[in-house]
Amino acid sequence: MSIISNSLKRIKPSPTIAVTQKARELKAAGNDVIALGAGEPDFDTPNNIKKAAVKAIRIGDTKYTPVDGTPAIKNAVIKKFKRENNLTYTSDQITVGTGGKQVLYNAFVATLNKGDEVIIPAPFWVSYPDMVLLAGGKPKFIKCGEEDGFKLTPTKLKKAITKKTKWIILNSPSNPTGAAYTKKEIINLGKVLLKNKNILILSDDIYEHVKFDNFKFFTIAQIKKLKDRTLTMNGVSKAYAMTGWRIGYAAGPKNIIAAIRKIQSQSTSNPSSISQAAAVEALNGTQSFIKKRAKSFSDRRNFVVNYLNSISGITCLMPKGAFYVFPSCKGLIGKKTKIKNDTDFVQKLLEKQNVAVVQGSAFGLDGYFRISYATSMKKLKIAMERIKLFCERLGQV
Image 1: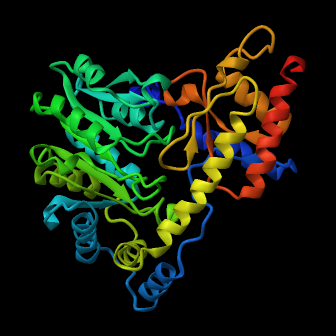
Image 2: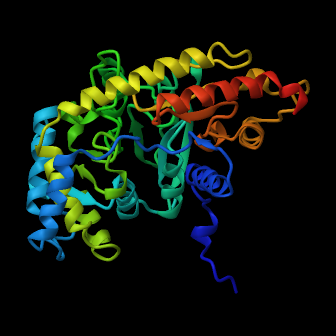
């Protein structure tokens, strides 16, 4: 008799977490590792948010809260959607969880039956497929290559839809590529979905505020006829540098929100009361630092992309958002370099030059690797020099 459940056997540990952990172990062993694997801003949580958390502790705001969020945080989320996206929601259309990941997982567990298909454009965030599998669904991947700017096209979407399609996931700006859908591109995808009325839409907007070059963010729930079947997920982790606080939220149809609440009531119950108080201040307080930090990310992006494109065998598109680049290493794979694939490339890069990145195959697209530039310019400069040196010496690897 097997001790481990069959559902758990269908999934694998998160590759990004694995890379981060490996980098930590190497650092602990005394190696000078530059970790470019984690999707975590290097900025500190703003002081006004910290003070709100400290106040919550001092006044005894340390008890259980309603399962899916206090009235205060739900009100802050409602205001955020109205202020920034011109979307109107009521409290029973809002859920707050322990990070955006929990919100997504709850949504799939609450809605998927065996055989239900979830369309996932690739490259994708590594956790999407495994969450679908754990919930009993079937991931259906659509490869969105470099020629399409790593974005889903209406033609490819139309071909992928079947009678079993339950959800489609849209992530813009994207992890791992930083690709961002324009309003026109979202509307064109929406036209396909308007003709397929039984499909639910999950819009992962977690990188909404990490955008560059005057890019104008647009989310698919802003298409009125699609709002009632769209679950829009967001959170405070990226824009407010609050990854460890673990607060994510979503807005969507009342029946799905109620189902998510039911799942959460029998798993984690409420998110941390202190983190919720901090998130209220994040959403309601000053937003002035967001653009300043985005400018810093933009400067890093420009440096990294330009440097990578100067390395023989590597090419890299210029992303419009998030804090990742997704360069191709296809020009370095082959008999001459002894590099077999992208996994081989990143493993040897870590081994030879102490630079930790994540292989593109982990995100569903071979021949690429992901760099998170959410670290200091000083470290990025050293990392780029090491990557260049590694590539130049590949014949000796």
